Length: 335
Ligand SMILES: [Zn+2]
Image 1 (tube, rainbow, N blue to C red):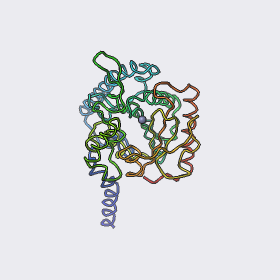
Image 2: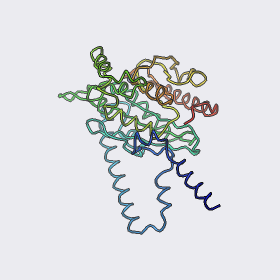
Image 3: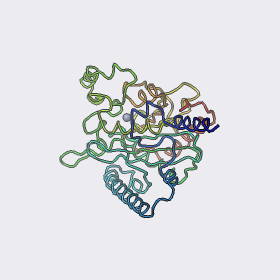
Image 4: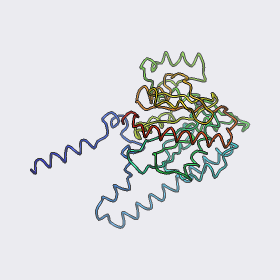
């Protein structure tokens, strides 16, 4: 009997390990996919000496202070750049962590809105992967603000509102804003993910792309840029059920994922559903074609002019309705 129990215990240890691929690919996950916070684990340590606890508290305090400083300096810049985002809208949302840093060492900040139910749909929400699509960042902050007030715990959300800070906050020598689609290395981050087909990894293809249209330069190799690496690591460690990524100015909802009834065919707000096609190395190509995680692309109608407040609210209502339908249908790909 004892032997059996020991065997059962060992088996459960093995079963509890994350998938081998994820484990070996990224040994330092950004977010635990099991959603069990480290605080829960620390409570399992018996009789922790008081000195340890106070040094741990100090460490936590220092970390929180550093996060606050990084958020503050980023939000100062973001609120200078975006007319519809004032400093407090950006800075007072209560971020959970810095996922990594841009080429110019700006923090890539993220906030978690945890679900009550561990089985709830996990949503990764990304704003501003293209730096010159200003409304995609502003709208993401407004939706975060809505969640800050009304998060019900029905879904688990991680928000990354400014995923390409250097592209957004680019300035020329005279101090004029010169926001770019790409990051500071002029790489289109939405072509820099690992493509589903290996031939698109070849330097020959990537150089040809640059020659054809430098705006869509996929980088010398997949994940050459720290900003796309941050998103890649987030996807692999968090294992979202679905990803929302906000862009502009095509004025549609695009979808990379399984066909009906998963596709958001009803659209969000005034934006209707239309497939734009999937480009090699885009988020849709990597997340859906390679990892099996559906991607909803929200293409706002203008990169510079915000939708009305009413339209922002209608889009949010429709997004949440869409997620409720998905959750009820229980037909999302299993993670
Ligand atoms: Zn875009």
